[in-house]
Each structure stands twice: as structure tokens, then as C-alpha cells.
Image 1: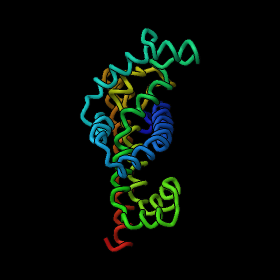
Image 2 (image 1 turned 135 degrees about the vertical axis):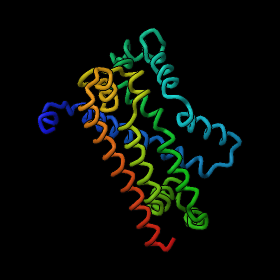
Image 3 (image 1 turned 90 degrees about the vertical axis):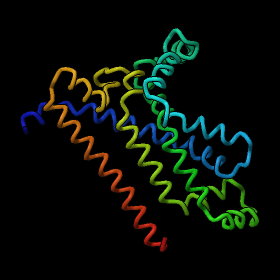
Image 4 (image 1 turned 180 degrees about the horizontal axis):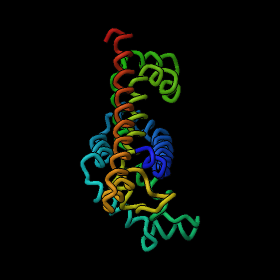
Length: 230
């Protein structure tokens, strides 16, 4: 057992965590104003935007991965533009799986934030506006400090979901060691060559990480609810 552990390549886990960290950071920046807008707007376009945002939840990863691979290929206008102008190859690269992960994990960041904003006391927000505070100030000084459970849930669940991605990452990035071969893809490769011992170890590590992440979120939320008597 210990001999097997010493022979395992843990680089896929490092790539998975790097991917999850970068994806979560990017999505937080873009999803925060989007979630705020969706929670405050009464526009007729709101259901359409919400449907587009939530699409990755119900769309098969292979479908999303296929269209993103097509868009990122050198034969497509987008892929050719990035490679010709910036020298960046999107298909089968770490940059490509970061962009793909941002699309695939978008609802896991947006929805908890939107729910958190919508659960805030409307009178508290109105008081901020009456006091002359702008929407940006109200967002950062009033809204965010009062929705820490939703904020934590959005960040951690997005991170965990990205760590466990498989279909989209495999379609867009393939299985390039040291670049796009994340932990979930490594498990798939091990099963293909019938290295079940290594696959068991990798899977167990992923299972433990996923449980710890979810347990931490639920424990934090339970303590927050108990603190405020909810």
C-alpha cells in the first residue's frame, strides 16, 4: 500500500487545485455583479439570463465540451484569433480548460450569490440608498457583510465542483501530463489500463476532499444560523 502511494504521481491533483483556484477567482469577479443585477432587476430579460446562466447544470458536459472544443480550435474564428494575435492556444491547453471551467461552473457561483442577495432585508438596502450610498457601496458595505454563508457556499462549492470536473476538461484539454491531466481524468486513464489500485487511491482522495468541503460548508452555515437564531 505504502509502496503504491510512493509511486503515485500527484501532479494531477496539483493541476486540479490550480484550475479550481483560478476558476473560482475569475468567476467570483464576474459572477458577483451578475448575481447582484439578477437579484435587483425586474427586467423582462431576467428569466432568459437566468436560464442561460443555469444551462450548464442540465446540459451534458460532453455537449458543452464539444462546442467549446469547436470554438477553441484553430479552424474557428475565436481559436484562430487568440493564436494569431496573442499566441495563445486554447484547445488542449491549460488556458482552454480554465475558460471551459468558468462556463461550466458559472451557475455554482451565481446561484448561491443571487439567493443570498435576494434573502437580504430589503429595508436595509433601501436605508443605504436613502443615506445616499451608491449601488456599488451598498453591495460591498451592506450586502456582502450580511450574507457570509451564501458567499462562502458559492466560493467553496464552485471550487469543489471544478476540482471534480471531468467531461468538459477531457473534451477541451485532453489528458496532457503536467498541463491538462487533472485528477478526474487521471482516474479515467487508470481505469482504462486496469490500474485499479491507483484508481482506488485517487478516488478515495477525491471522495475525502469532497466530503470535507461539503461538511465545512454545512457546519459553517449551521453555526451562522444558530448564531442569528434562524
